Length: 119
Image: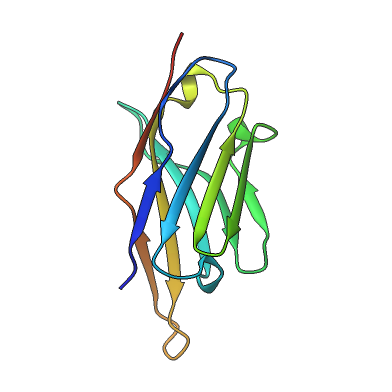
């Protein structure tokens, strides 16, 4: 069993910065991949950024150069800079687990944290 808990969501002004955290019940480096997703009202859930075991990162085009994903011990972070209203969404942490003995994969999700960018 894996438990994830997001925190750090808040109301922030356009152009501001915010850092989200996802605290996992075990080391973040143990997962095959960890990701941040977001879902805005009336829109489909989209991948924001992810990081794999080797430290390789990936970002959706709209946040490249503004967001930075990182991990340390049991915490996955998302540093967000130059925020704009389009970044408003519920942000979710995902941990993809691969079972070594079977190769089966399982994804674990947190409950989300709300980010609202408005003046």
